[in-house]
Image 1: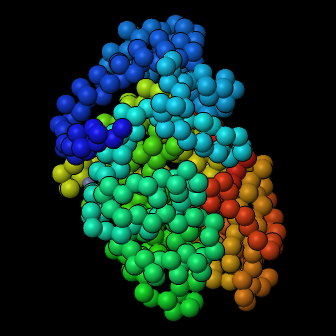
Image 2: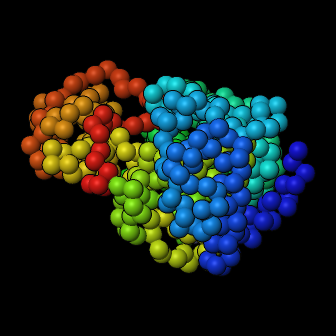
Image 3: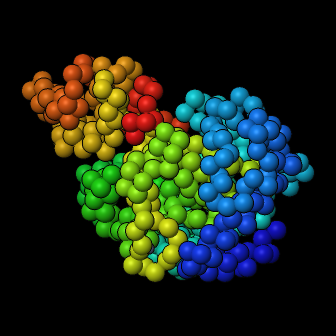
Length: 427
Ligand SMILES: [Zn+2]
């Protein structure tokens, strides 16, 4: 099945240096093909296009994409994910993946074999771009059973050790000491959690060169911490199971978008956000014929950029992912406070062991704290005062001391969770 992999790898490596003009032509060609295919072969898009009064031939250029209605995860769930699967594709001729959403319902995603190959090639591309080499040992913390199984069979570019995310930290550390990896990959929170134990026990023989982090909000303060404890350099990556890799950080510290496999839009209240402005991330996969995702809202907030990178790659660059929509605190005035403004306040207080900020109403937030040693009422009062200043509007703050704070789906750590709807015009 993977016979064409070398071809796809060469193609992906070449595409990262395409001129903007040839990249645009590539995208338009694939987009037209995808739209035609989705309209003809899926129940979901056929109905969607008819309701919107558009036909595939209305989509000729990238700017025509805006004629297609944006779709959401909820809509996909309501209609049934099966209605996105194109005629002729099924579990027997596709790779299958199950994603769990924050609501707990599963989404079954099918990837056809050509898409799977190109995605494999794209992952080679970003790993090479981050300094991973064929002789490297790659220690990868995974929270997904399917990915764990895959990590055991595939060894194309590097040797890989898949480590279950739910293994206790002490065992993860022992495995890392035995394996002596050049590269460690995982959620930033997994690495921080291992790092704390390594620091406390004076363990200094886990020294990877490269730390690939993803799946969570990536804050400089967290990255600096793991770089200090592990000694390597961190590289960010951004993706989603629905479309696989979306963007990744090169050695020159730019987040390059995999624009030859996924179109990424940043929308502010339905309109494209200007460079440097916040927008909701909406993606269109250009490869997966088995299950097209066209203008699909991921629920993340990112910032587009027009910068070019000194590494020479022409793949467009984005700024940062500031978190999920529901990671933002919504103030009574409608102003949004990103999680990146809240989290460092708590991290700066060593007496706080773990924390989470939860918002259910615009005028109040609840702070859960697992107190560490020397946590006192005075420490708490100072922390609340700082939080109050950061929010800058009258918001009631409740503190609850708890014994533990649970991780969310797939071992992700979320420090801020808001259940208040965001007014997208205020992004
Ligand atoms: Zn670059």
